[in-house]
Length: 104
Image (cartoon, rainbow, N blue to C red; front, side):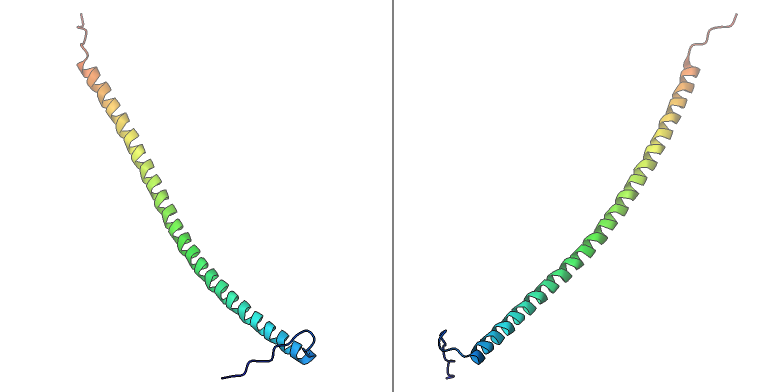
């Protein structure tokens, strides 16, 4: 078994041992920060990819909506034209079917 390092008290720790403890602490903190940074980088990359995909899907949806609106406007214009044509036909039919007054 490996021997455990000696435990120090405030009265027994030397300057060198204290420096070594601070170096261990700094190394541990740097390692933890590196892990957290790597995790944050991965999360950011994943979020960026999702945002790009969602943006592309939103663009496709907007194009489909614009196409649908254009098509609806065209159909509405055709319906108005058809309605006007039907009204002219009805007016002509009414004119033909109106009883004519005999001429003297």
